Structure formats: C-alpha cells, structure tokens
Image (cartoon, rainbow, N blue to C red; front, side, top):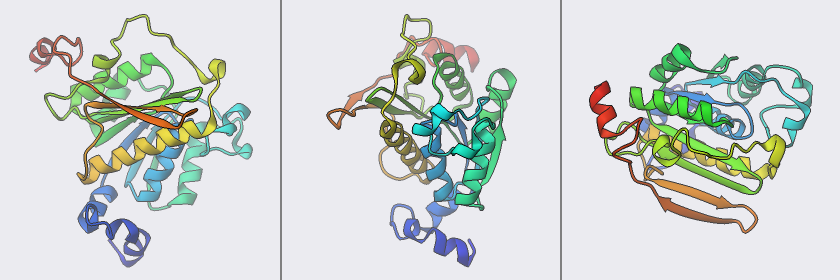
Length: 255
C-alpha cells in the first residue's frame, strides 16, 4: 500500500482483527455481486469503500424510477440507463481505486461458471429463485463462499454458505429447487426501504470477514430480521447429506 491507501484505509488497519495484512487481502480480492438493486447497492458501496480490488457486478436491468426509493447506488439522472453502468459511475466516485467490471447480462451457463471460478467469493443479491439456484450450483462446483441475502416487505434474511468447507450447507439444502416456494417480488409485495440496506450491509460485512479471515461468519446460520419489531433471530442450518447439489452422492459423482 502507498501512503494514500494507508491513510484511506487507516480505520480498518487500526483494527487488530484486520491490520495491514487484512487490508492487503481486501485490496487483492475479487468479488462477484449478482444483482445491482436494493441489496447489491449497499453491498457494493461498502465493499468499494473498504477497498475491494475488483468488483464484478452482474445485472441486465435498467434503472427505473420505482427503484430510487431503496436502490441507493442509482440516482434520478440514471433512470433508463443500465444498472451496472450506473453502479460503475457511483462506485468510481466513491473509490476510484476499486476496479468495477460491469456485466450487463443475466448470468447463466458458461458465463456464470467463468465468473464464479474467477471470484474469491460471491454475493447473491438477486430477486429470483432460478438465478439463486444457478449461482449456488456454480459456487458448489468451484468451492466458492456464497453470501446470500433476501428482503421483502419488512422482513429480511442473510446467510453464508462457505462451500470451501466439506460440511457446509448450500443454498439448495435450505431452499430445495423445485419445491413449491412462493416467488415474491418487491414490485408486487412492496419493501420497506431501509430493510434492503440492513441486509445488504450485513452481506458486505460477512464478505469482508471472509476475505480477511476474522470473526465468526454466518456459515451454518440463517439470520432473520423482523423489521417491524426490529428483532433479529438466528436459526442453525445443517448440511443435507441427500442434497441434490452438494450431498455426498453428488460430491462423489462430480469429484
């Protein structure tokens, strides 16, 4: 780090759990963020401010006026523009030292596989189960930590699936693909603006802890937020040995 970086990140460096070594790890990290909306906005902004070396941000949507109530990475003058380009402009103003790679596409197939393989960890900030499960499968295949968040109405949840560990659960263990799960969207159900900020910020915090290697992550736990009561609840998660994605039989098959 040069003198400017030492000063910029000094409040991190002062933390014994981070220090110079931890900040160097943050500067060298590549993080993939899937979704540049309500969750992706605070997550990306805190990761950029913290100095993450490269942020690859995937989203094929454009900024809409209805987004501005909660998607703080975007502004009124960016309505109609690609969210990833709006994100790049905002994050560059916030920290020009962070490299932002905008991916204006819905990640799937070979493109998703390549991006997950190149990343140190992945943040799932999307709003649909199809993408969530595709991202999870890629993270399992490449043994990459996945930080998952979701928010709707006044409720939110966040968890970590540290797929570098053989005993870690995956997203499919928690929400099996193909089950009759209700797909809820902010456009239909509404969302209280600060809830996505709380969950997205928690995702950023978990990502930085994983990069630095400090503290105890949410791996093996699902953190639930009731925003109306402002109460947090932690639920223990276990790996499903019969999971079709990360279970013992599947691991033996792909290994």
